[in-house]
Amino acid sequence: MTFRGAGGDRLAGLLERPSGTVRAYALSAHCFTCGKDVRAAAVISRALAKEHIGVLRFDFTGPGSSDGDLANTTFSSNVADIVAAVGAPFHAAHVRNLLAGDIDAIECGGVADVSIGGRMFRIRREFLDDLSDSSAEATIVGLQRALMVFHSPVDAIVSVDNARWDLRGRASSQELRVA
Image 1: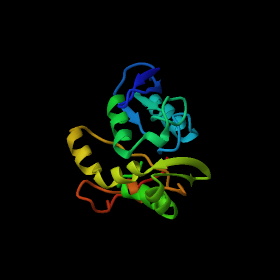
Image 2 (image 1 turned 45 degrees about the horizontal axis):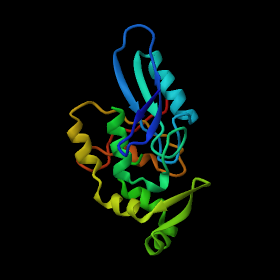
Image 3 (image 1 turned 120 degrees about the vertical axis):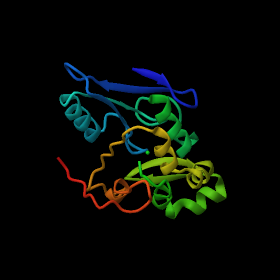
Image 4 (image 1 turned 90 degrees about the horizontal axis):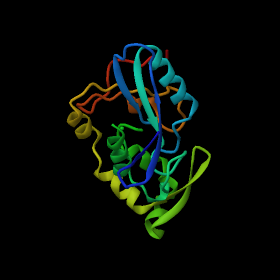
């Protein structure tokens, strides 16, 4: 399936449909440099479908099968893509940490090619600026819906601690378990 993202680009999505009665629906928002077809997203979506939960997973603007250029996105535009479909790290500032060695080049030149997880991406200054202005807490509270977060405890780029925060901004006492 395809739909228009917040910036008007065509985004590619896939809906895992359960057989029988649907208990709920979920939206899978993968890491910002991955795509809807990353193995973990596919395995989790199919497992949820077996439990009668429909799952929409999609490619954000730029990566995967979606149109657009990752270099022209911001954290807020990624959040807007999620809204168009219906956080990645809970705290957007974590993404800035991934770019620590390249921040000066991005800020001075307005854009720079950076390596994230062994892949090259072009990141613009606007992406960095936008990270400071985003608030996952406000977005989640505004959902007024249940939210379930999955995150790999062995992710070498984004720590599982990003999935362990409650809405009061402190570490959750509940440990996540891998099924």
